[in-house]
Length: 78
Image 1 (tube, rainbow, N blue to C red):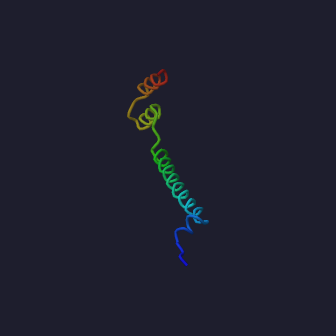
Image 2: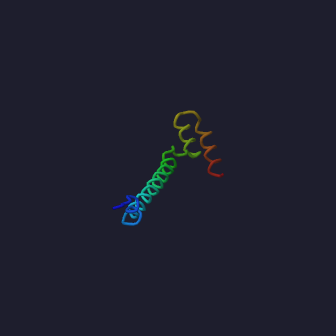
Image 3: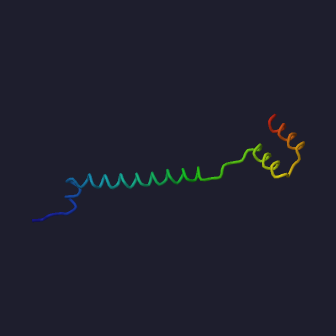
């Protein structure tokens, strides 16, 4: 009896297993790529706005009240 191992895998139910294996590989690669991009996008530090920086400088005593109000008015008008 001449029995070929590979013919059973390709002509029987084995092709479904190969298709499932290939599908899972592409699915895992896609999932990895998506999560990699999502982490790169959301793991960054939030960007500070000009008014936030101005409030911090005033709170630290780096600028006076007059300069603070002048700069705040300029930022609000822009």
